[in-house]
Length: 218
Image 1: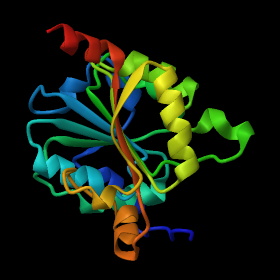
Image 2: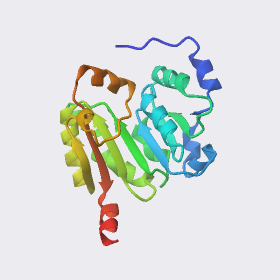
Image 3: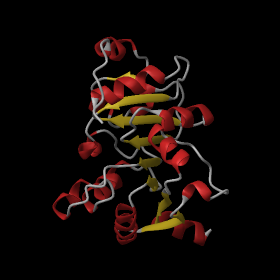
């Protein structure tokens, strides 16, 4: 379903305390955007913001950046952000060029309900394709950590293979995340609809082998 334009969309962007123009200019100095220097968590395709806003509220000891390329969606997210939420910033940007935004600064990536790009010829657009994983190598600070949720099983299986081949260990894999009592639940607006209708959600955490091997040595 197409979203309607917001009449005061331009004003929303201009008045927002968390919206950042020209985000590429902060590459390598993202800490300048925040009041405190803290670990940085990034969501690609943040949608209307429910997930990342809740995460920023729950975890003030982390800084968060949401990336979204669609103005209509982003404006709706900006309207929801509390004015006193100082550990969240939002970029309007196409994540295909995410390595232009960060340089060894990101501690955690969230990939929530990304476009599955189901056709073989569009594989390169999947956020867990080798092309994207190579870019992520350039933006992670030390550890490589990715958390993924999707309702698309083929994308989930593809991601398991792609991440494994790129040197990630996979943890907490589930084909029905909502039934996993041990896992924390923070829902996006999209996901809330699934939870209420009983649609199963796939979930996993991926950590770069380098960190796993380091922990084993210690």
